[in-house]
Image (cartoon, rainbow, N blue to C red; front, side, top):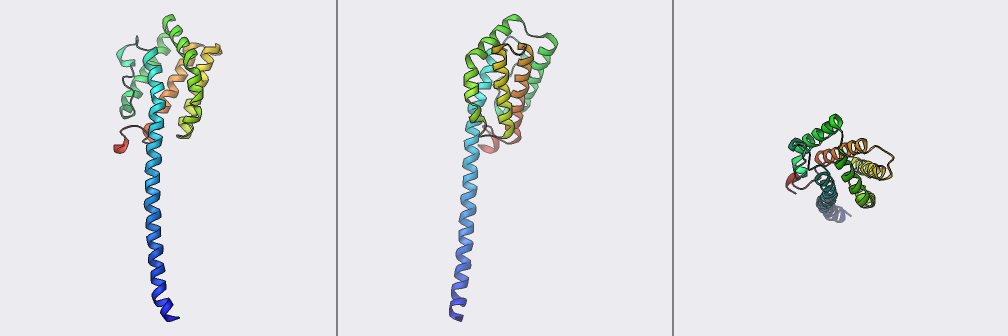
Length: 177
């Protein structure tokens, strides 16, 4: 009995420690893979937001232009979106922009609606912002909301999406990814 306890017990403890190390390494690897997957999802969703911003607001002053709207440019993104919102609140939208936004929402709303489950793979706030963007795009098409009001709400939720990506480091270039 002393032989078993003296030899097998230390071996069992060693095996358990090795197993814990393997589990820890595997878990860290899985977390890294999951974060990389989420960054890919965020990048794909962000592309649709970039198209919305570039297709509809190119005639606004440079301070209101979102530029490339990459996640690594978070502070510039925030500034330009807020400038754009302020500009719309102060001056409204001219008829050309209203028609352009309405046309854009009419052609793209189904894509945004279909991407809601994809957005749910990120954070809760990513999901909420995407659902609200889709809602207001649908409201523009169905004329349930005034276009200028709905555009402001869409922009606020684009701002929220960008903030959530930055806060959770879910963008290309975050922590070397």
